Length: 101
Image (cartoon, rainbow, N blue to C red; front, side):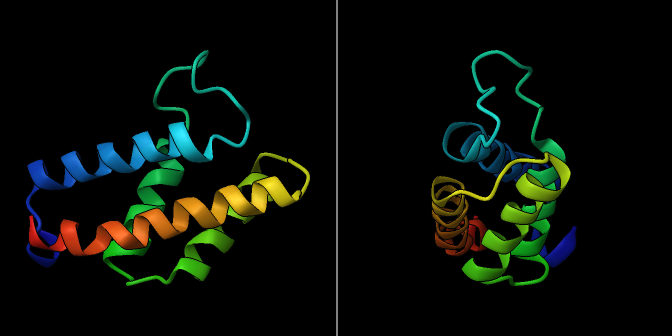
């Protein structure tokens, strides 16, 4: 149990992060055609950054942008930057809730 989180709670919270990635970030536009686990590795890393490393909005947004442009080979666009920042902000806003439940 890392930082007071048990496995069940962690799975539940990671599922919320996964959903956020699929619905709000989804840089390759696959949320309706691919398995829902497409972004799991990135969501799990972002969750660890959020909870274990206490990452900021800027750090998480930069990670998401690196994933999209580096790993996925997408072009850096204003929309991609905005989506990355919005998801990073949403994650950081979830941290207090995640810490108390």
